Image (cartoon, rainbow, N blue to C red; front, side):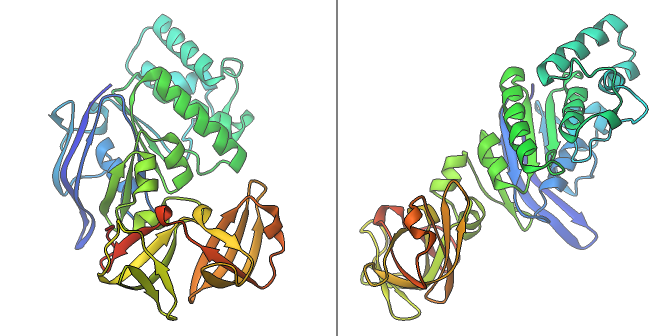
Length: 351
């Protein structure tokens, strides 16, 4: 296990800066998830930690030792990729033990470590099979087993579940979290899937445009997003936004309608954006709520119903479990509990 510290790290490709002033401390045994849209720099940061990308500026420390110039093999880190990267001509056992054999580890130790890892991962009956005889989930477990037998200081996961179907992703998320509890190893996990981030992380690092936007527990980011990006990215469906001007304790929308703000929010601040999560919106028949909206689409998902609306010219979503809204008609009214409202200033920052 290991502690990590990322100090003012930047990364340039020629004149293009893809990471800028990244600062992050990771505790011993912590499970950190880097989340953000494609191109935000999360995989680049992971590869820099692994030693697969050069660092343009700043320092990366593992156990207070600077890693900047160390090759990957000198960092004692195991990486699990999106592609399984298994040797097709080798059995499961040989794939898992390959790094140990390169280190000239004795055979009894190899056998013991492979057996222990295969039991944890449910692979003990598959050790003689070749990768072509395995399912996608089994191949990913072999890739994880290959990392586990090395007993590294830290595990790095680069979107390891992206190639799996939805049911297997759900199963593997649970297995990865359980495995982390058993091993207690420091882990950094990259994903663009905010559901994976919410369910796996001790802390989430939300990234966008080469910058860290917010660091905190999953519920920190969900309940108190630092800015509009985090508010919109974390949550499924994402947060609804309504733009307007704040004066006299109300938000005046572009069409002249008003939303009363709780006393805890500024009574006046000019341009602002109001946010509310779809599951907190209260739907009612048209004319019986604070704001009328038109219904564009009704989307039953089984666990709930998502109503796609147009409100004050903006796309707006409601998540409800009440099946009366399966056929709501062309119009609906919505109201907002004051305690569920979020307010962001003209720069997109939470107030």
